[in-house]
Length: 71
Image 1 (cartoon, rainbow, N blue to C red):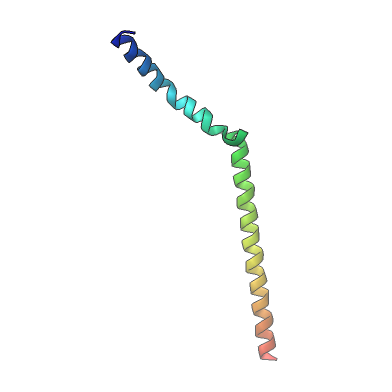
Image 2 (cartoon, rainbow, N blue to C red):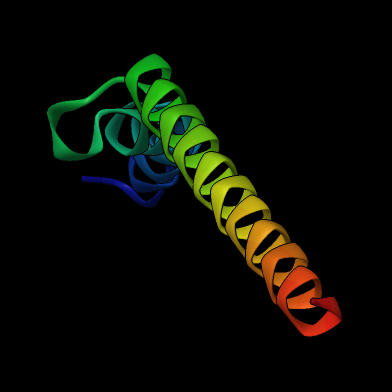
């Protein structure tokens, strides 16, 4: 292969690399990007719900403690 052909092959490979990398990254674990976004959204909602429930629990507990101290 001549140096010009090698240069052409390397140039075309470099041009093709970003789409190949994106396609590979999008299907990590056999899931598409849409599925990863859905999983991340569900995880975020679960974490936010857990934090809110924890916050409410401690607020109720604090009110009960205050009420028992006043009695």
